[in-house]
Image: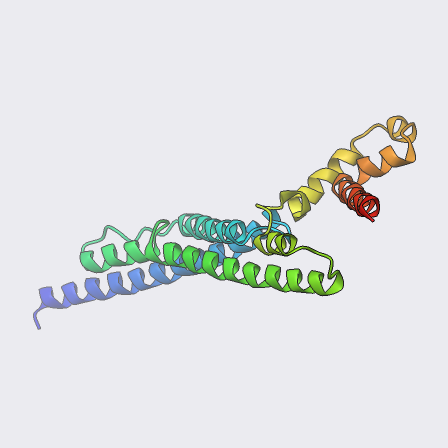
Length: 206
């Protein structure tokens, strides 16, 4: 091997090792981002959310987190002198809109959606056993879920508490007990009122 070939081999080796380190770092950032994005998405859906909503939130959150993580790594895989095909292939795989993020988002969405569907079916069966008077349509509705169920999500509950806490103290004190309850827990109070109305209708039919 001549002197020129030795220098070329040295430069190639350096660039290869550098590319491997950059790809590893970019892949790690993307993986962490996908995990955090998937977890962050859970605050948008409540326990009774529809499977499609849970799947959509998990998939979108995972993909977005991976894209942000890959971008945040600030590792550029393209450029250099050697291994242009390898660089392009790694970019397609590890980039913000690369295969890993797309596949990861799809897998997270499908897994979360199926898991939610099974959980809702379990809750519907338990509700039917607890209250045999529930109609088949009511049980099916429980199994389908209700959109994102944002009101019962972690973020939704946090917003409700923040709104109640922002009310002037004097204003809260002048409210009737029923109004105070509605202000502190609007979703829970509405559910109780609905259940009371259903019970009253059932008594009328007897």
